[in-house]
Length: 177
Image (cartoon, rainbow, N blue to C red; front, top):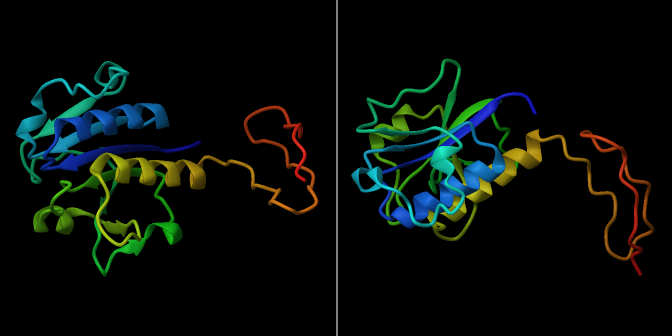
């Protein structure tokens, strides 16, 4: 997959959420993680059992104005607002940094103004911060990772599987009845 992504939080309120988010970012291949205005996150997160801060860079910024991103990196805010784009129809930028607000709040007006795009996960209410980050990263990998189309649906005749982009063609071993 070409490009890169990062994920971060603004003003997060639980160190466990950041640890979980960092572990998931590491698992999905994030280039770096970050926090903005999150004094609480200066220490080690107990829920980061993969020691992600030793595997991918982590940057802590004191304010929205202090946030530095690589050139050509699109800042995408994840926010449950009426004017945000719904995630299922969102085309992820090749070079992106996603930022999530605190679990019991929203991205600050300053951060929303700094974001090139606002995207929402179309749910009835806000998700846990780490869960929302996982949903966004999974959607990005699904869209840009060049995974093959799922050719089999329950109760249908199986169609041949297309060749997998990352190696040898897969073979079907299970039959649907």
